[in-house]
Image (cartoon, rainbow, N blue to C red; front, side, top):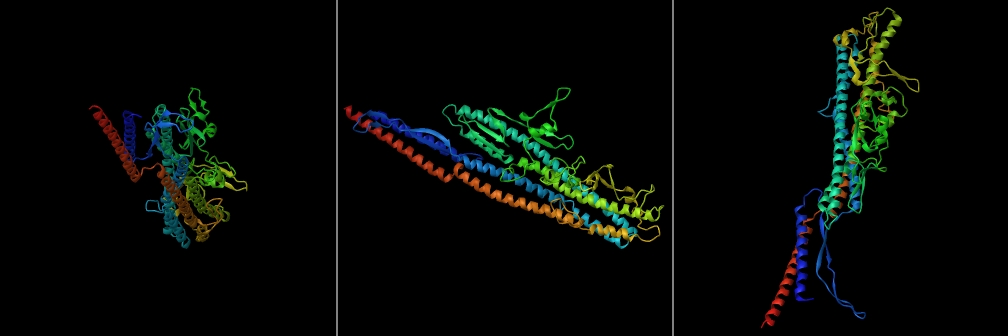
Length: 559
C-alpha cells in the first residue's frame, strides 16, 4: 500500500475511536436515566486488498483499517422475562397486603378506624348490667343506647368497606386506561423502530422506551411477548393478543348496572347485542367469553395466576357487596347455590370481610329480636290477653327493624329456613324503643321481674356457636367472633406481607442481575473512555508518522 493510502488507515482509526468516545459519553450522560440500556461499540475490520495469490505461499493482503460496525444494546432475554414475571407477582401481593392494611384500619384497630370493638364490648357490658336488674330504667336505657351505637358503628364500618370497594373500582378504570395507553405507545414505537432500522441505524433509544413500557405493563398483568425479524414486538396479555400485526386490541369496561363495578373485557372478542335504536350493548352472558381475567381460577404461583396489580385489585374488590347470607351459600338473588361462598366470596379480600362482618351483625340482631319475641309469646301462652313486650297493635317488640321490609326467605338443604333482608345496611333501631326504652319493662304480668329473658340475653353473648365461615371449625361467641375476625385480617395481612417481602428480595436480585447486563457502570465507562482516547491518540500519531515520511520523501526527491 502506498503511503498516501496508509493515511486512510489512520483516518479510520480516528473516526472509529471518535464514535466510540461519543457512545461512551452517551452512556455516561444517561447514567441515571430510567429504562436506559447500556450501549456497546461493535468494531469490525474492513475488507482486505489482495496483492498476490500463490498456491505455495499464503496470500499477500493489506488491511484497510477498522470499521465502526454498530452501536448495540446488551440485554438478557431470560433475565427480562424472569424480572417482569416476578415484578408482576410482587405487584399482585402488594395490592393484597395494602387491602388488608386498609381493612384493619376500617375495623378500628388503629386510631383512624371506627373502634368497633368498643361497640361490641359496650353492648355486652350493657347486657350484663341488664341481667343484674332488668326492671331498672337506667339499665334498659343503657341497653337500648348501646344497641343503637352498635348498629350505627357497624353501618359506619360497612360503609367504609363499600367506599374502599368504590376506590378500588376507580383504580380498575385507571389501570385499564393505562394499559390501553401503553399498548398504543408500544405499537407506535414498533413502527418507528421498524422505520429506523430499515436502514443502517439502530433505534436503541426507541427500544429503551419500549422495554420500559413492557416493564410497566408486566406489573399490571401477566404478559408474554416476542420480537420478529422486522423489530416488531407482539405482546400477549392473559393469553390474548394485546399488540399484534400493527393492531392494538383495546380493553373496554363493562359497568354493572346494580353495583357500578367495572369488568375489563376485550373489545375484539365481545359479541355485542343491539337495541331497537341500533345502539350496541354487552350482555352478562356475552361478557363471560370476552372478559380479560378469569377470577374463578385458583390463585397459585405454580399456575402463574398470581401476577399483576390489576387482577389483584379485581380480586380484592370483588363484584358486589357481600352479605351474611352468602356464607350459607345463598346468592344475592336469595337462591341456594352449592359452594357459592367458596367459588365467589372466599377469594375476594373485601367481600369475605364484608360477609363475615355482616354475619356478626346479623347474628346479634336476630338473636336479640328472637329472645324478645320468644318472651312475649311465652307470656301470652300463660296470659292470652298479656301485653308484655308488645306494642299497641299487639305485636312483639323488636329492638331492631329492617329499614326496607324484605320478608323473603331461603330454605337450605338441611331444612333450615334463613330469613333474608337482615343486612347491616338495612337495619335500624326501633324508634319507639329508642325514644322510650322503658317500654321494654321486663316486668311480667304478675309484676315479677323477667330475669329469665335477661339471662337469655346474657347467655346469647356467651354462647359459643358461631364460626367465621364454613372453612373455620372452632365455634366462638359474639365478642370472640369479632376478635377472631380482626385476628384473621392481621394473620392474612402478615402472610401477604411475608410473601411480598420474599417477592421483593426476588425482584431486587433479578433487577440487580439485569442491571449488571443493561446498567451503566461509571467505572467501566471511564475505563472505556481512556481506552478509546488512547486509541485515538495512537491513530493520530500514526498519521503524523506517515505525514513525516511523505514530507521527507518529497523534500529529498525535490532537490
